Image (cartoon, rainbow, N blue to C red; front, top):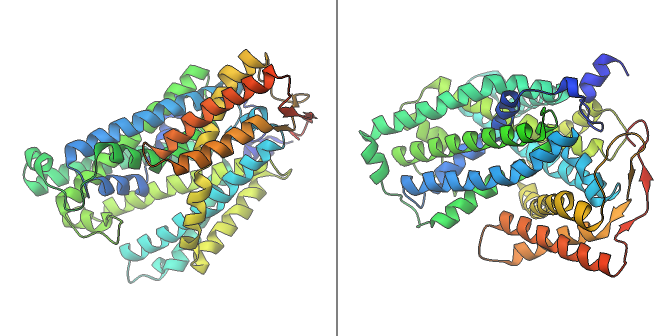
Length: 444
């Protein structure tokens, strides 16, 4: 494989070499760009529809802190072994079981949410440039989608480079929006005493909203931290970036929405209208669109890494296929019909983190007396029925529980359920890791 081919392949199914690892700052900035997005700013707007600014800030801090803690464990594993989340699942769910996770990521993030974000991008551009030819919604979807695909083509290097530009800009927008909101109301005290106009939301519900917005990103931290120099630096760097970026965006969205008091579109806060109302100009809209770019190329990037674990073809081809399918969904205009399906699939993503954490720290070393290995010659189980059963059951059980934070419930239940199943089956001398599959030189 040539150097250019290796760069484009981005170590998608092999460990990242030590000499290619990045600084903690680089990891932190890249993970920060994952969370700074329109959806996170909209989350802040959704909070103040039913709570005051103080409680919205607390919800942002506690919600993002929860995700940072979960992400630390996921990121720690990625940096230790230098492999993506989907590669880690080979050890957890078995070689073929990991394929299910790869397909799940490809469907949800690589096609579904990528297509939804492209459609939203087209509508945003059309509102910014209502009379210009390149801003026609479908045309904007095409060139916007191509830009996002190009970044994902390049891989981590492309994401990191874009993040170095996007993170400072969105930080400026957040500070700018917060300042404009205060000026619009007249004082900081006015912001903290402003009343919400919707039905009351409890602090606990607010934390649930924040966690629900960004849980999937924390679970796939290894896709970024595999470039970390040490496990602690990788896990800590990604968690700090994710936490700060999320809190910044949620607070800015909350402040702008509360200050502007513009009507929502259905249940969605009208952030563009709020920005206009408090006096933010064209440059602010440009940054907002840029933030969307940094999020959606990550959707495609993670989806392609997931599917690369399943099919033996170049990552660039997978990026193109997933990107074109997502773009087609947006152009046809059926992206909204996929949201219930994507949300249903998303129910089974959080417990994967709980099972992965349990497998690495408890089941493998304490119960099975094994350790993780990757690379040519590594032997994986074909299936881990206990891990798969724990994930499915945890997803279903958490969807039936009406209290707590669904994503966190799923993670905790998955963690505990897998340990219990593994312990009982092991004591009964029932093997729950079925078959063996050796990794070949090409990663398969």
